[in-house]
Length: 379
Image 1 (cartoon, rainbow, N blue to C red):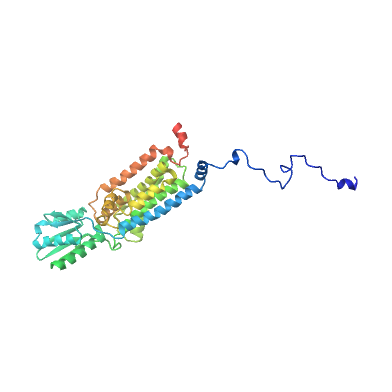
Image 2 (cartoon, rainbow, N blue to C red):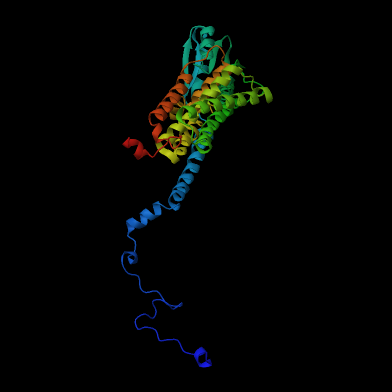
C-alpha cells in the first residue's frame, strides 16, 4: 500500500444527510408531533397527583392543622377549668336559715353553677355521693355548716368547693367544717393516674392495630381480630402491673381494672381497623381526631366533667376514652357502685367497629386473599 493511500481524504457526505446522523456533535431538530405539544392543565394535574409530591403536600397541610387542633383542644378543655354545673346534696331536714343563706351564697360564689339536690336524710345524701350523682354534701345544723367533699370525684372540684365554702363562711360569719369523705390515694394525690393508664390503653390500642397493618399485613380478618384481643389482654396486664405492683401509685382492683383496660385497648384497636377498612391509608386522621383530639380532653380524667365546657362534658361520656376513665374511676374509688353505662359504650364501639370491618373486609388493605376493590366488586 502506498503512502498516498493513507492520507486520502474521506468521501463527501451525501447531500441532505448532514446534521441528522453520523456526526457526533449534531444538534437535534425541532420537536414535532404529539410529543412536542405542551401539557394541558388537566394533564399537569394528573401527573402531579400521581407523583409523591401530592400526598406529601396533603400530609404537610394535615399535620399543620392537626398540630393546631391538638394544642387547641387540650388548652380549651384543661388550661382554665371553670365550673359549669356542680351537683351538690343538701340535707333539707337539717336546713336552717343560716344554712339556706350559706347555700345561696355558695351558688353566687360559683357563678350560679351549683346544682342543688335536696335529700331528707344524711344517709340518702351519702348514697347519692356514692352513686356519683353529687360531688358534695352540705349539712346545715347548729351554729355552722358541714361540707363533705369527694376528692375522688375530682381533686379540682373538691378544692374549688372547699375554698369557696371557707370564703363564704367567713363572709357570713358561719363556721364551716370541710371534710374529704372520698380522698384520693396517697400515691396519686391529684387523681391523674387513672387518666394516664386509660390514655396508655387508648393510644397503644390503635398503635398496635397500625403495626399489625404494617408488619402483619397478610392476616385474614379473624386472625386480625384475634391478635388484637391478644395484645389488648397482654398490654392491659402490663399497664396495671406497672402502675400497681411496680410503682405502687394506685391500689387497683386488679382483675376489674385489667378487664377495663383490655376492653379499652381492644376498642381503640378495632376503631382504627374500621377506619382503615373505610379510608385506607388516611385512617389515622379520624382515629386520632376521635380518640386523642376529642376523646381524651373530654374524658373527665384530667379535668372533671363539671369543670369542662358543657358540650365536651356531655360528649366525653359517649366516647371510648371517657367511658374507660369513668369505669376505671368507679372501680377504684366507688367499689360496689359500678355502673353498666361505660361498659355499654365501649362494647357498642367495639361491636360497630368489628361489624364494619367484617362486612367490608374486602376493602381492607390486608389479608392473604386480598384483591383490588374493583375486582372484588365484579365477583
